[in-house]
Image (cartoon, rainbow, N blue to C red; front, side):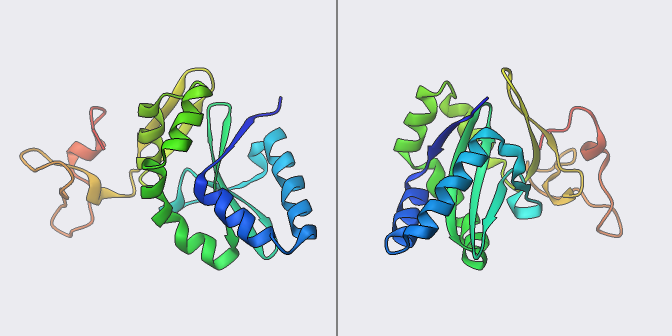
Length: 176
């Protein structure tokens, strides 16, 4: 089953710029995009600040994308070093890109789901439940996000050594 592929404005802009004078690169990228649309799991899952994203290399370039239900959203295409440095900055642009939101809605993904998913990049372990939607679980390694009793949401609930998790972070009702 081929997934529907949607390119963000930023991806289109970078793709056109980088392949404008290099027809061979353009062919390689298009071939790779076809492979990704058939099997999006071929991309390497990212960790830490880019958790929730995937990447596929076309040396020296990288395609960075996310899978939301049965849609592949192409986020960034750039030189390897530049792509990873600029991708966290693109997160804000993704939330303000009406063209992308409209395309996702026409593909059956509600704006609320998309916004929740984009905001969760790097903060939670995101899991796609095909046909059900997006679910996420708190990242237990990031204790600085946990809120303890009597603390404002988002403030750390640290123990005496500054690194232990609070009971609130370990409880099943924890909201991250």
